[in-house]
Image (cartoon, rainbow, N blue to C red; front, side, top):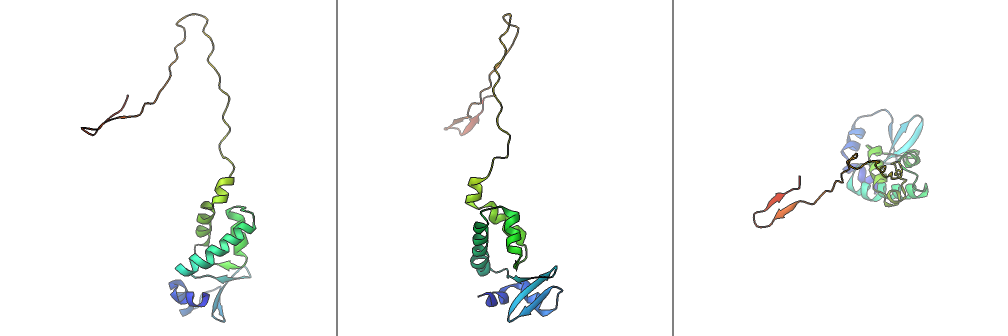
Length: 148
């Protein structure tokens, strides 16, 4: 399936027609070499994206314990490469339901409520409660009224 997907990828056809540094073809499979590390190049085709890439991402991301984008990226980059790999992986990790449910909150905890001081004399302090009312809709004329 991988060999047939290369012919459908326009980027692969460009790389095969003229030599580019870092790319080599062995037994019909394209390899990408960077920093003396050889990786399999995966084509950008719908078949490869839906079957191969998503399966590999799911397996590696789960194997690493849903450790996040960076560790998943480094786990896959050891042996694989495809164009826009970081963007694809970031989108995958952001949509992972397990990661979203187990994510730590990023905002500070709420502080304690402090009641206002009791005034010593009448009419020395002024307080006001703000109440947001929903807008009123006149169903006959379809006019929206807001409380301001």
